[in-house]
Image (tube, rainbow, N blue to C red; front, side, top):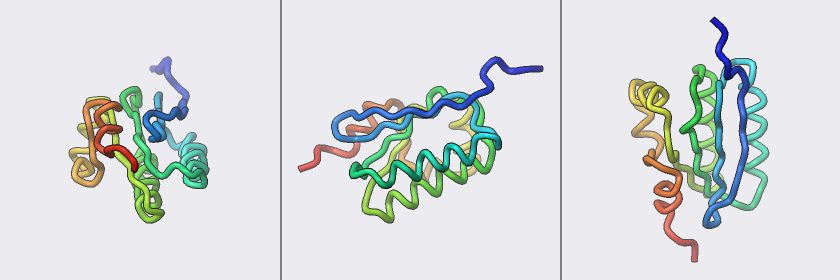
Length: 121
Protein backbone atom coordinates (compact mmCIF):
# COMPACT_ATOMS: atom_id res chain seq x y z
CA UNK A 1 0.00 0.00 0.00
CA UNK A 2 2.56 2.57 -1.13
CA UNK A 3 1.49 6.16 -1.43
CA UNK A 4 2.86 7.93 -4.52
CA UNK A 5 3.52 11.09 -2.48
CA UNK A 6 6.19 9.98 -0.02
CA UNK A 7 8.14 13.16 0.35
CA UNK A 8 7.66 16.50 2.00
CA UNK A 9 8.13 19.71 0.07
CA UNK A 10 8.56 23.07 1.77
CA UNK A 11 8.99 26.32 -0.11
CA UNK A 12 8.58 30.02 0.57
CA UNK A 13 7.41 33.01 -1.35
CA UNK A 14 6.62 36.58 -0.38
CA UNK A 15 3.20 38.13 -0.91
CA UNK A 16 2.48 41.68 0.29
CA UNK A 17 5.46 41.57 2.66
CA UNK A 18 4.25 38.31 4.22
CA UNK A 19 6.30 35.13 3.96
CA UNK A 20 4.13 32.31 2.66
CA UNK A 21 5.40 28.87 3.67
CA UNK A 22 3.95 26.15 1.46
CA UNK A 23 4.13 22.70 3.04
CA UNK A 24 2.98 19.87 0.82
CA UNK A 25 3.12 16.11 0.83
CA UNK A 26 3.49 13.99 3.92
CA UNK A 27 4.89 15.42 7.15
CA UNK A 28 5.97 12.10 8.64
CA UNK A 29 8.39 11.37 11.45
CA UNK A 30 11.14 11.09 8.82
CA UNK A 31 10.73 14.77 7.92
CA UNK A 32 9.91 16.40 11.26
CA UNK A 33 13.50 17.45 12.02
CA UNK A 34 13.98 18.82 8.50
CA UNK A 35 10.73 20.79 8.69
CA UNK A 36 11.57 22.10 12.16
CA UNK A 37 15.01 23.24 10.99
CA UNK A 38 13.49 24.95 7.94
CA UNK A 39 10.93 26.82 10.04
CA UNK A 40 13.52 27.76 12.67
CA UNK A 41 15.76 29.24 9.95
CA UNK A 42 12.86 31.42 8.80
CA UNK A 43 12.68 33.05 12.21
CA UNK A 44 16.18 34.48 11.73
CA UNK A 45 14.95 36.48 8.72
CA UNK A 46 13.57 40.01 9.09
CA UNK A 47 10.03 39.19 7.93
CA UNK A 48 7.98 38.39 11.01
CA UNK A 49 4.63 37.71 9.36
CA UNK A 50 3.97 34.21 8.09
CA UNK A 51 1.17 32.33 6.37
CA UNK A 52 1.31 28.55 6.33
CA UNK A 53 -0.17 27.20 3.10
CA UNK A 54 -1.22 23.66 4.04
CA UNK A 55 -3.65 23.06 1.17
CA UNK A 56 -1.44 20.31 -0.27
CA UNK A 57 -0.39 18.75 3.04
CA UNK A 58 -1.87 15.25 2.85
CA UNK A 59 -0.61 13.67 6.09
CA UNK A 60 0.81 14.94 9.36
CA UNK A 61 2.01 13.09 12.44
CA UNK A 62 1.54 14.47 15.95
CA UNK A 63 5.16 15.60 16.18
CA UNK A 64 4.62 17.51 12.92
CA UNK A 65 1.71 19.32 14.51
CA UNK A 66 4.01 19.98 17.45
CA UNK A 67 6.53 21.81 15.27
CA UNK A 68 3.75 23.93 13.75
CA UNK A 69 2.60 24.87 17.25
CA UNK A 70 6.18 25.66 18.30
CA UNK A 71 6.70 27.77 15.16
CA UNK A 72 3.58 29.77 15.98
CA UNK A 73 4.71 30.31 19.57
CA UNK A 74 8.23 31.38 18.56
CA UNK A 75 6.81 33.70 15.89
CA UNK A 76 4.44 35.39 18.35
CA UNK A 77 7.16 35.60 21.03
CA UNK A 78 9.39 37.35 18.49
CA UNK A 79 6.69 39.95 17.83
CA UNK A 80 5.52 38.40 14.59
CA UNK A 81 2.23 36.98 13.39
CA UNK A 82 1.16 33.70 11.85
CA UNK A 83 -1.97 32.43 10.11
CA UNK A 84 -2.92 29.41 8.05
CA UNK A 85 -4.28 29.98 4.56
CA UNK A 86 -5.69 26.97 2.79
CA UNK A 87 -5.96 23.73 4.68
CA UNK A 88 -6.54 20.27 3.28
CA UNK A 89 -9.98 19.14 4.54
CA UNK A 90 -8.49 15.99 6.13
CA UNK A 91 -5.90 18.04 8.00
CA UNK A 92 -8.54 20.62 8.96
CA UNK A 93 -10.54 17.83 10.61
CA UNK A 94 -7.47 16.88 12.68
CA UNK A 95 -6.98 20.52 13.67
CA UNK A 96 -10.64 20.72 14.70
CA UNK A 97 -10.47 17.50 16.73
CA UNK A 98 -7.45 18.90 18.58
CA UNK A 99 -9.10 22.35 18.97
CA UNK A 100 -6.23 23.87 17.00
CA UNK A 101 -8.71 25.78 14.87
CA UNK A 102 -9.08 28.14 17.83
CA UNK A 103 -5.29 28.29 18.37
CA UNK A 104 -4.34 29.10 14.76
CA UNK A 105 -6.15 31.74 12.71
CA UNK A 106 -7.32 29.65 9.73
CA UNK A 107 -8.49 31.14 6.43
CA UNK A 108 -9.87 29.50 3.30
CA UNK A 109 -7.04 30.82 1.12
CA UNK A 110 -3.55 32.24 1.30
CA UNK A 111 -4.82 35.57 -0.03
CA UNK A 112 -7.38 35.82 2.80
CA UNK A 113 -4.74 34.97 5.38
CA UNK A 114 -2.33 37.57 3.99
CA UNK A 115 -5.12 40.17 3.93
CA UNK A 116 -5.91 39.43 7.60
CA UNK A 117 -2.61 41.08 8.56
CA UNK A 118 -3.63 44.37 6.96
CA UNK A 119 -1.03 46.62 5.44
CA UNK A 120 2.17 47.35 7.28
CA UNK A 121 2.76 51.04 7.84
